Length: 114
Image (cartoon, rainbow, N blue to C red; front, side, top):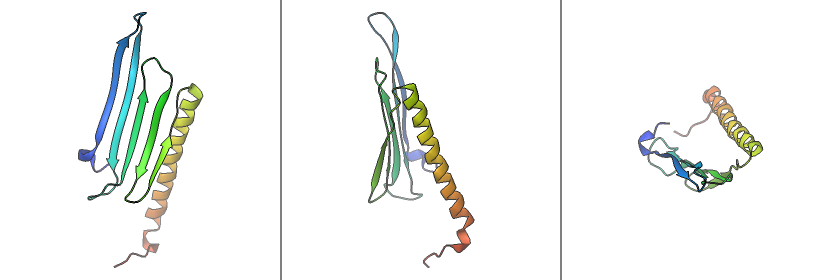
């Protein structure tokens, strides 16, 4: 992405030993990328949190522009949900890439305001 200097990325893994001296991990991931080439607040945010001792994962993707926002919740507390989340992410990427190819291949047909 072009606005890497504006990104906030946090990747964290905290080790904690429980009463049985078992090491457990608190996993966290957060990123924010601004979507406009110039100034603007349009962004994509990704947040992932798995708390120590829990199989439940709180994960979401928020895509926003100046007027609208969508939020996708991606659960991965079980192996089946984990693979479904990967499928959702792959489908989103594939759909966006297909749209990009469409725009690039039809540039001459687009009518721009002058």
